[in-house]
Image (cartoon, rainbow, N blue to C red; front, side, top):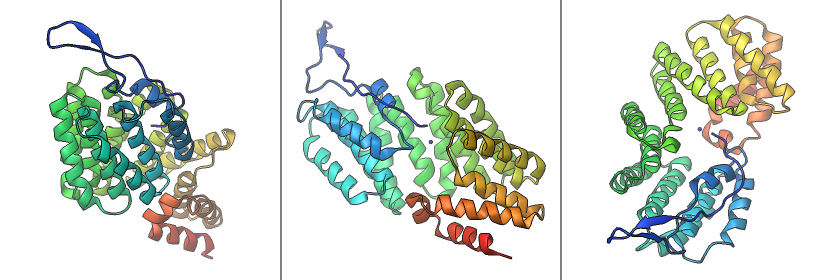
Length: 318
């Protein structure tokens, strides 16, 4: 998934009246400025994003559509911090006030309620909400939100349905004329790649990871570019292309050291590759560093306890 940063503003918005004349939307119905929202979001630092959102809430009219939309993003930031009860309470505020508001308010509410269920380990409750969000977004012509809903179904649905949902999200993206919506393609290619990887179809996974990389490079975000290259290297390992995988991971390590941005996933992969090559001492050092970094990640620790335990055991193995 892309890190997005800084300011949020509320732009003026105009609609056509039933008589065909141009009228300014009322402050209560002015939508959230999505370009500004993108600049405000930093998915790598959800607590900071939440703080920015809360500062902006003070500037928005009470009960306005924009304020309700922004509250859903507060809930999303809380969920990313694994503050699920707080996120649910925030969404309760939206639910109590969203009757009669623009369709996008309820769509965002459904998406974030579903994300909370999925992230807290209850995807079965999330799936109907994502399906409802998708149907409503399609009906309202909200392409970006429709793609988001289909993409979440590609994550939360039963394993045998995920690929179809991801491909549906790609089709929605390709049909859309909205440039912001088209930015979904890199994430969708990544998700499809992981779906194929989980199925053991590593060559197909690599194809999609390779398709995602130039899209990430075009956006210019170094973190997401590194993630895309890491995924390619991970597919190389699964395909037995160990030397190529190791070369990429070593380069990624150098870049993260230069950027002072340590990444436990890179150390984990280096450990796996060195272990395969029989370089046990260096592998243990990499596993130890991976454990140190990833055990401090609350989301990883909650989602991957067995993987974390394996890192600990491999780091100590003589």
